[in-house]
Figure (cartoon, rainbow, N blue to C red):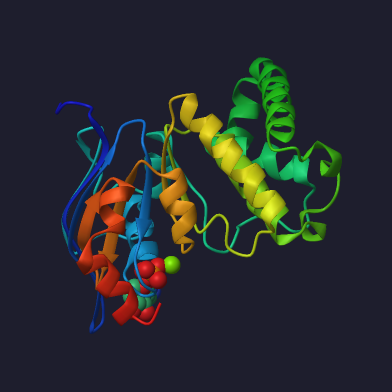
Length: 257
Ligand code: ADP
Ligand code: MG
């Protein structure tokens, strides 16, 4: 299809909820291999944009292309299969499952037909289980969660929960990782660990798209920044340029952020 310079292309996307146009003709690109920051005042439409890209919501109009393929109308599991993983502003983990079970379940969830598959092809199940177990262990070590592997997720701190949610996303081996406010409410030590891991994932070739309120974090860690305001893109470019953009400064200062 089109060249693969951008892993994600959003074009003229509109989404209204009743009288509120949350996303209003937004267009932007996420360059392949980038760490792209999506910023903007509260209510700018950032989380809605994540829901549109991941198929949780369907745009009223506009196009969303993943590696050149139009994905509008595809359900979330198809978009996940296409290589998009995402975390939520409020982490979605199973409180009554252990950390290890949360990770294993994320992998099984992906195959979708595991229960049926287990009946139909019993020979492959043991192998699949072993592979999942291995991947769980790798993920636990990567995020330094192995010491809490057998604790219930409900016992984790807010920051550990965010790491676990990232771990659940990584179980699906995504090419594009979308994180909604990964550092919000996370203590500085865990934020440092998270950022270190995000850079490692990027070095492996994964593209990252992150929503974050901490402007310093965005400016210090992203190589591309998209600014949303009132549902549209206000500006985009390298952090140094965004920082000096008067429209951006005004949107933040005037926007009550
Ligand atoms: P951000 O993540 O940038 O803070 P959101 O995407 O959450 O912004 O919200 C953008 C606008 O859309 C806000 O005015 C919000 O109140 C509204 N909105 C978001 N989701 C819904 C929904 N499900 N129903 C009605 N309004 C919504
Ligand atoms: Mg939000």
